[in-house]
Image (cartoon, rainbow, N blue to C red):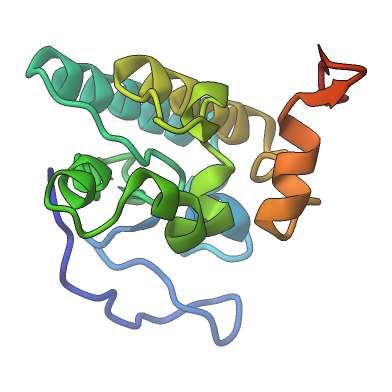
Length: 184
């Protein structure tokens, strides 16, 4: 995992009062996608070239992680940092597995403690207990992130503000003893 511990340094922002990104600085991908081209300091985030560079870098980073035998476990736009040049850093790779292996959290604790922003990017099998994660779950989350990068549509299921709302939307329900697919 690559950990970016240094906070962003404030820089001049032609947009009036916001933070720009200095040379070599990174921001969470979620923030970069939300900012868009508000000013010259953020203009790179709107270009197709930047989005392609981020997508390539993200796919390469996830592929390298999987090739090394690892999995991320909580991939989302919150756990990816990007630079204005399209550079990609993965954060928290393997953190969920480490929390489970060290008994800091149990399978039943994951969703309540990690919350709705974690759950938005979970593959359907990640909602089960015991959870099934691994590379396939990372690829699910990667698909959602690529969708955000290229469509500009925002985070998945953004209308759901709580775990209850998100689970009601995504999880199958029982009707007459039979599973009914959720209306997505």
